[in-house]
Length: 393
Image (cartoon, rainbow, N blue to C red; front, side, top):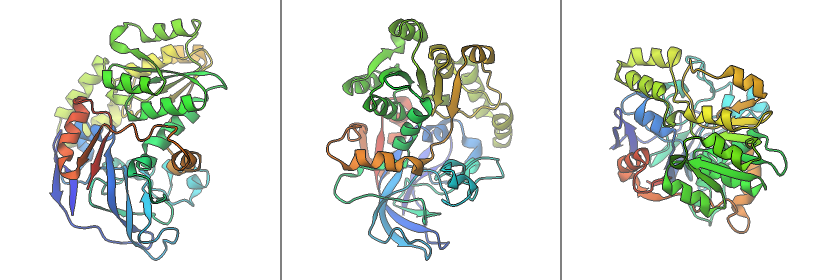
């Protein structure tokens, strides 16, 4: 089969690799019909090379049709249309019983002291072959796959793999009061959907970004926006819009891709120049992130408010303004999305009348799998208006 494979910094290729096969009674094989490039994939494209092997298959946002199931997989059958959550969870361990599926104890990667294994995402999370491929082996398929109805286009459902549950959890974790306000930093796919979900719930939403196409997409969905290029002080601009207090809540949907934090950028650059073993040690013990968005979030949220972090951070010694956070009484929540925890909330919005979250207005590029390297390049460089790239195997 064909698959997108990693070969070094900014070097992904579409190659022929062996077809996957059922190895365990809890496995399934799906034929992938749509898969997406995630902002987190850009971390592999740029800075997480020390934790990924040459030829590893990328991707963690797939959906498709079931081809084969193991003996212990009973809730799906060949021919079913399914979405595959990005985290691999057993559904019955201590953590899964508490709906903390991203911390599944059955698939935790104890070698690196990390949570549940992920598809297509480095040795840190199990080095499980990913879904940017024609076929995918799905471990823990007795629990993970989400069955969806036939009929609507893949774009209606594919974001259940990551974007929608991550965004829903971001809003949940933000604890916006009834009729309250929330600022969303970063209007990439997660920020766009977080903003739409928050507005759907009746909150005032202010989105912040510097990319014109992202700002315009948010405006199209009724979001107030601030262009970071047009103000030297985004938190002050937001306070001026909110009686001097700041918004009740803030969602950081940027993470370590943030612009403007010189020390973090330098640390990432230096790390990328080290041999893999030395770079891995630096990142796991002394890593620094680019914290511009998180610093702005702390400045922006009102006293007693909540910050919800959905953007991925990877540093271990990030400087945090603890005095300011303590003084303001800020609540901070973060973490990988517990995908299946939110499916029952999301599914009626995808299968009912209309498209209340605008899921069919998120992808800006739909490319055949063979053009995945081009998709990565324009997404990483924010060229050609790329906000979300879907691939068709």
